[in-house]
Image (cartoon, rainbow, N blue to C red; front, top):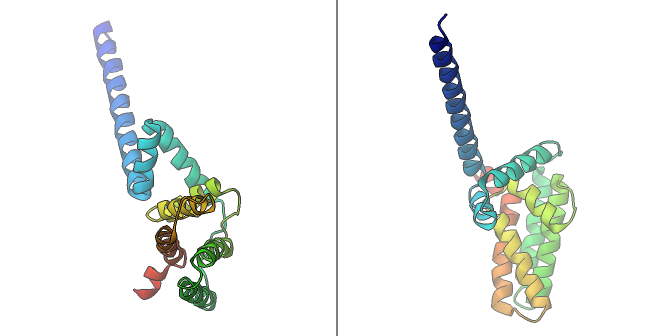
Length: 180
């Protein structure tokens, strides 16, 4: 076989391998972008390194895959819903207490579902895998509570925190799936 033929074959193999790698990377990026949605966008804008973000998101998926996350049985779901309703009704008379209880209730639901209760950042990362559309609500609510503790937030901010906790709470209870 002439040397030029070998060179053409080797070049074709390199081009094909490069095209396959490019296609697989785009497919992986698209899958992660679809799965994580706003969390993907937040991380990319925060870190400006798409590949590092995608490695982090893949690491999160792998970590959560090894956890024993479970759906709640109907009676447990109802117990949590009753607790939420009582807490929400309390907001008018005690906004701070209601928001702190909402945080505790969300934490209790996460624990009941099987999420580890490590530090907040790890909890948010774990939640982002199965609840990417509402994990930002969790961060916002926690930031508002921290601001309130520093004297930088008022009752309207606490109302917003309550709304944020509610969105995460509903998603954790899988209420959309139950109503279908």
